[in-house]
Image 1 (tube, rainbow, N blue to C red):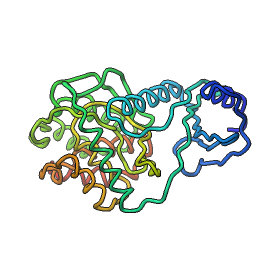
Image 2: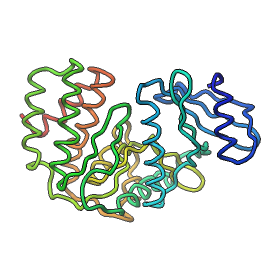
Image 3: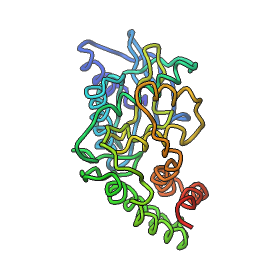
Image 4: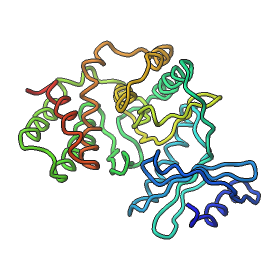
Length: 292
């Protein structure tokens, strides 16, 4: 990040409307998917991440728009958006740095409460008025009326095509996935009123602060709230306090347990596409719950 110091200082100074200079850098490259760091100086700190992807600037602009949308429509805590800007060899995203606190039971409960507040916002269709990204992958958000149709056409079919192109899927697993997608209405349960979704609600996409749970890295759209709930403990278990906090605001349908693995198939297909065959076992186990 040091090589982009002048660009970062100009962007932060413009956002603060005062001169700002960096005097300390904490490298976070081992903790983030992108090269990232916290830069601080003159009583203010920012989180900066770098992408050298061809669509990196667009991805960062979509992320900023999603954060603003969640803050404005759901009233949840989000970081102050400073800038997304092109630099030599890539793009930078700059956000005000949040001061994290250790997660106690109340902090975990706040994650569930924050997710529920997002889901209180309702829409008329599934999708969104802007295309998006799920991690580095393009995400088609063109609206459709029903969740089962949206999940099939805008989520599973595109991700399946990407996973096939990666070369990691066997013909047998491809066949099962195709049959599952064609039978989605049998597995999706009642069609919900579309809720605003974080879109990538795994636990690491919240920062626990003294003021509550702050939301980061969204992939915003409208859809089934169970999709978000299925991703909260996608990578690691979470304590029951998360779901208890959620239930303080909204109920969780009893059928969610049966559908949880179904919603995760999207994430497993994305992981296979980006990271390779290590996710094949999890994908296969999820599919086998519905198609034999």
